Length: 163
Image (tube, rainbow, N blue to C red; front, side, top):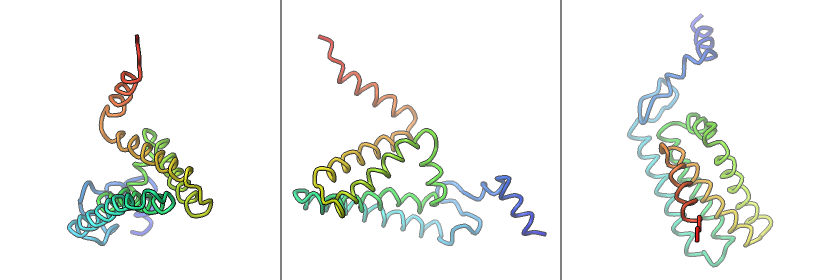
């Protein structure tokens, strides 16, 4: 009977309370302690940032640069899954406010890897990396209230040339 009740509560969304906030304990859905989750976050973030910085060494070899940079970018973005959980991270990334930026970001990641590993196009890999960075910045701005609006207005005012 308890199993049926649990399934019923899950279908009705009553179990969403188990997705605890930042570093909160979850009821059985994560076996890592809050300290272990923090260490996992820090390790992934540092490894991702290190890959992105080290990719600059091979900047003149765009294919190697694209692979290392994209791998580091995925590690850095994925590091937050340790803090909030992968399910919640995916739901947040697919929120209507940031779904377009997320889809463009994932598409650019795939395009960067495909153009670097299979097509071997340096120009396409660099364009994909630039687009990837822009999409990630735009998606990240959606987490800060009014940040997208401020950046949009700033860019419009910088590009507006009234002579």
